[in-house]
Amino acid sequence: DTGVSQDPRHKITKRGQNVTFRCDPISEHNRLYWYRQTLGQGPEFLTYFQNEAQLEKSRLLSDRFSAERPKGSFSTLEIQRTEQGDSAMYLCASSLAELAGGPTAPNEQFFGPGTRLTVL
Amino acid sequence: GNSVTQMEGPVTLSEEAFLTINCTYTATGYPSLFWYVQYPGEGLQLLLKATKADDKGSNKGFEATYRKETTSFHLEKGSVQVSDSAVYFCALRGGYSSASKIIFGSGTRLSIRP
Image (spheres, rainbow over the protein chains, first blue to last red):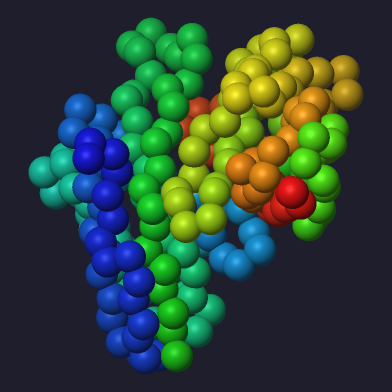
């Protein structure tokens, strides 16, 4: 399977614990995105990387959240001192960057299956 | 800031009925517009897109036309099937805001009765 993969698919943790999720993008994609989806809502953007550089972060990404993409391939999203409000589906997506000189059309973002986090 | 508003669900229809899911947007500039679909137990998939005014996106019998004058991108299908049961998200990207992040609506759950 050459799509975006995420691990684990489900995580149950107790409030106050730290959790880490992993995303493996499509191999030739240089952009990687993290979104959060709460029940009954659409996904909300958290952050994105181009290669190993983190280029944008949403104000939703509090100090307890940190994302890395150290070698420009897979990425990790860590949540420290989890709270019940962190319970959500965490989605990863990847794409190619727009062509140099400006986008003529945005390249499609391909989404992974998500990691469902439940904080008790 | 940019935003997307879509018809609340759930929507329940009989097989072969006509489907419309309304979507309107607020954006500066000229964003690209999308419909994504999430089938039960699966990840988000791009259903169709339109990148400029008056473009019509189409796929699997679904269509949506980018209407700048009404800031709308309504999803339509002439004859739905049970297999179309899923959650549908209207979304936009670009304009004068970040060209990278996608802004999604809240989703519309569609159920089709045999």
